Amino acid sequence: MASQGDELSKRCPECNSEHLVRDYERGGELICNDCGMVVEDSFIDQGPEWRAFDSEQDDRRARTGSPMTFLSHDKGLATEISWSNKDYYGKRIPHKNRAQIYRVRKWHQRIRVSNAAERNLSMALQMLNDIGAKMGIPKDIKETAALIYRKAVEKNLIRGGRSIESIVCASIYAACRKVNLPRTLDEISKASDVNKKKIGKAYRHLAKELSLNLKPTTPYSYVAQFCNKLDLDKQAIVVSEEIVRKSIEAGISSGKGPTGVAAASIYIASVIVGKPRTQKEIARVSGVTEVTIRNRYKEISKILGIPGME
Image (cartoon, rainbow, N blue to C red; front, side, top):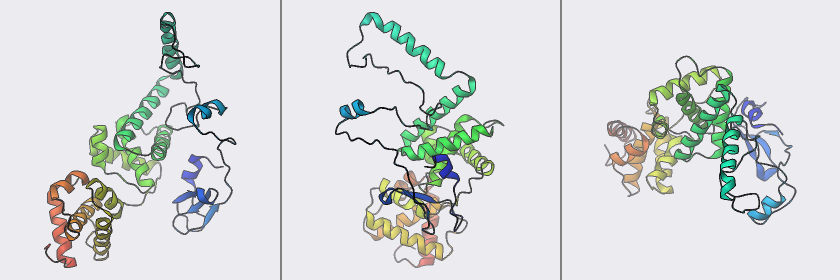
């Protein structure tokens, strides 16, 4: 089976697209999301050959450690010493031995990070994990972000006045866009306390140096996300997406920020479905100003001829 790093660099031989997905319901086939071609039809099941019906049975039957992960500086291959004061059998460690165990843990931590490069990588990946947790980003996206960050380290992109924090944030932003679940720079900036201009600049540098070739985001990418935060139902999402579609066809969205168009479309849709949300509420979840929402919705309403909204 190809590794995650290999899959990130694969392209469809038919249409040259990078949007490849694994279909585990069909035996783990690797399928092009754009043209539907089956790129790989052989997939090795990496799971155990045994079954377990509770966590205790799972621990007892397992013969290996945790799977490899890019979120750990040593890829999860090193031994972990638990910080709980219990031994392998679950019995509490006597007080007289705790000082000795504490020293063992401390030296174990020092040995795992042997030089400055490993220490920086460990610190950066911990930061990536923390920001991802604050934003509620799934583990697979964090793994992709960690892989992008590792590639940046290999190419020495951290130097030249760019901080570790900004490159970590840029990696998260790029990973979200890569899987077509984009998060705004404002969201990442709030979760990390890093200036969004620095994140944007670092992202552009990453995209250029690593040849990420990511497609520009569209208003469609943000509609469902913003509607969920505003507690709007499926009907509002459908109406918002229809307004976005008509706006794109009319050329209204050309040269405009996708988040602003999405926010204005949601504002109009919320009124149409009878569940109005204020411009202030929408501005808070979308990261655009009320003035931008007001300008976009007036423009959309006028050109599309939506009654009661001009």
